[in-house]
Length: 297
Image 1 (tube, rainbow, N blue to C red):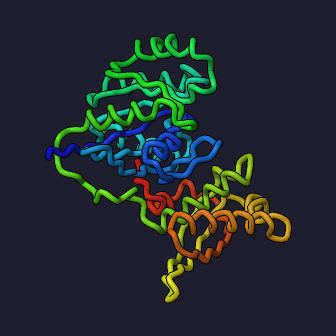
Image 2 (cartoon, rainbow, N blue to C red):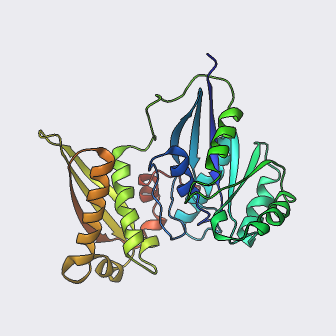
């Protein structure tokens, strides 16, 4: 039996639907999603088995013009994932089309040495007659070897993409156990699930100035786990918004995150949240490393 195994970097501008696509390809939730841009902050690998092939999908942060040290680390993680992969898939929001951020990404990918595929996502949101002209416009700017049209939300076109990914993987042994879904440690999974609910339940500047760290993970004799997470924000005003009137907002964030973690881990989770304001955390090298990112400077 010949096995195949390779890595695929899933790239794109913020809000292209990369994480939703990775979850759809994996058939399970391995990375958080939200309607807000810049949801993914570091590289997350999902392990997908398709026939005799193991496809290691790397969900990367959205590529944008960085301003903060955190932004620079996120963009560096995305480009690092692209350079390290056997295959790069550029995901483009077909509804948004060929935007300036997509053009900037294409300009850099055009000179890359890694094989490049185009994935037009969200095809359920635009008229079909617009897809071929858009694909032609994009493929004229970089050496794409294949083009796919999918809806990560509905699953339309995803099976064809998955089959072709399996065929494109180089021959070689598997790098992960066949039943493994992701390389994300449980402590980081807990922090990410909490952050996902912050993204969903808060607005304006709060979601992008919030960071979550799992401070304690305690296994209990009854099979449950106690998880203590600290949420860091940049300003006292953001802390007040996050906590909410009489603690209502942070309680709801905790309730939703607890339910999600219980389902994902398959056992009871006792989740406790603490909120601290820490000005300038997104410029701190230590905090950036704690998020699983490398400081680009």
